[in-house]
Amino acid sequence: MFNKIHLFVRASFAMSLIVVLGNLSGCASDAEIAAANGEQGSAAGSATGGEGSGQGASSTGIAIDSRWAGRPIAEILNDSSTLLSQRVFYFGYDSSTIDTADREALTEHAEFLTSHPELTVTIEGHADERGSREYNLALGERRAKGVERLLSLLGAPKSQQQVVSFGEERPTALGHDESAWRFNRRVELLYSGY
Image (cartoon, rainbow, N blue to C red; front, side, top):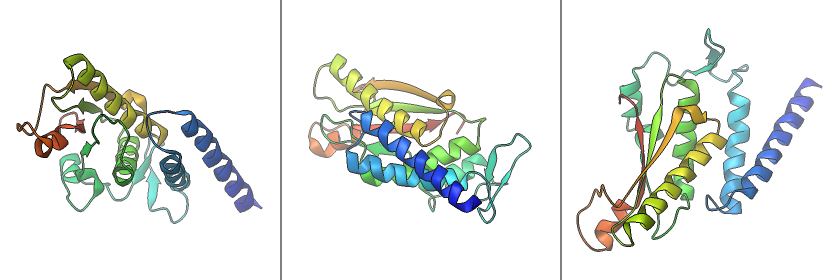
């Protein structure tokens, strides 16, 4: 009986998230939102630290993911075998839509932030050199806020996130064509102190 109630609660939670995500604009398509909700539903179930989840509770009541227990933060963030090493996310021309392929890595970042409440992350939005300075600042901010919104919906507290837009001011590629511009249309996640 308990399992049926637990499954009903989880399904209700997932459906509520679908409604909330469906009302957000500029962040993702309906199909992407549904995919994110599917990930959220399973993440919500495993974050309880239940039997067989591989997680325990810390003295603060926050679930500790065994994948990260006992490892230094810098080592975890730079481990190329994990999705946490992906901290730069690229965007299409004049777009703030998060690519479907980036959602899995952002889900991992949300889980990591949730299990490490002492960490904060700066979400930097960037644009290429085309367009006015003001437009590019606004576009960089839309990109960063889209990532912030997704991280929050996946469980990362807003208190651990800060949004900054640099527009076109900090390019990573210095060319003046698409081969450079595609690297400048990005959001970077910068963990404080790492």
